[in-house]
Length: 586
Image (cartoon, rainbow, N blue to C red; front, side, top):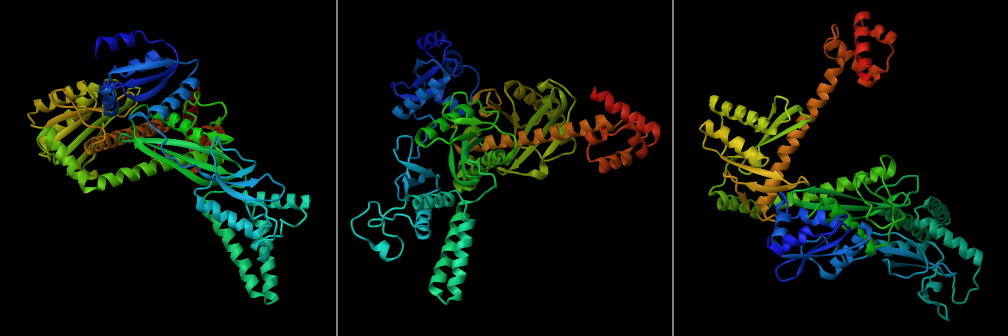
């Protein structure tokens, strides 16, 4: 970093604003926003980052900034600058399409057409949607025109047209308009577009049966086809429906292996009608990129009456025009969970496709050869986990021929400690002393989840056992994303964050972390159970299981008065249990 850049970093204001990173040619390569410009911009040049951010920082030769009055203003400015300069490292809403809606025109005569609209679109009337595509919107309008006496022509002519002669229009060009009748038809169309179709279908069924009884079979088949069309259109759009007619949008995101997946779900009148999906490499903070995407999305599309976001999301910078709510139950919460699940599933699918590609496997092998001079046949990865120094555990996962071998996975219960280095030392010694003692299969490479100090501890143990095993380390940044790879000598190995080997290493790190965390949670649940019912004289395993079968949970056992517990247990055992439970409650 040159002295000019250092001086600029020290003189940044503690104010909200937008910053613009530039490369050596003066081209803006990244635009960001900040509550505190000094803190945010300086963070790029301090500490460890994932390789995507490291790549960005490497390209930064200079930066500029614009101070704003608030973070909201900074977000708006960020959007405008991204739109203006199209920076290579920014998340950008690149989909030029706008979703189709159906417009029920404001004119006296009922008339529907589909339009694509955004904030700048001018229209008169009521809109319904968005629809997933133009075909769905067009089919719905065709059906409306068949069922209801709507105007079919864009402009009224002077003479009766073909629609009149086909008995699909009453002839609005010549007919005197009955305002009450027009209002009734509009109301019917409005209810149909909101999904209230039962009355229409029942009416068509009655007409179909009457036509069949009168042997007007062609007319009966027309009614039957209309009923089938309504059911098809309705089921095609109605993947989810509830009785309560709620309308809202919900967005959620998921991060894995250096990628960001965002899913938006659009619910209208209690029906899930369409979805928006974005997947791309992640260069910055996931939540900031998520908020930026939402802002860009609603700059192009109509904002909903309500936007549902996870309660952990800081959405204070988004415009106050959108009513943003956080929920923890009900239909809206279920849709938020569905958005999260879809974000995960869509990204997992993309990553799975990448990994199955033969070129992907070959690329990983070649990268190992280029970096280390060989491709390991067996890799063992380690990670530790504890909560407040309690229930300290370690996990080992094994990859053979670049694929996980779950039969070889191992879990270790360690001595409780806040000292991560001590825990790493313990698990490495226990594992490789056992490898030597029992002559177990030896890995070609050991990967530690941690930084330089964890690497040094693991290497010292393995060297002391005289095992010729390559030891490297994978570290994460403050956002818990894979950040760097350290060689056995502690040097950082430069790897392209878009390369298959980076994706492969990140997925391995996520796997060992998941395995360690799940074991830690299992122990915590077990110990929570043990602390309540264990160590009570006379309360053995059979009696504990009897209580749990009868009352279903420890909380329900706690709620029982002493007299009831004495019906299940000897008096002295029931008293001891009651006193322990209520003492711990205090």
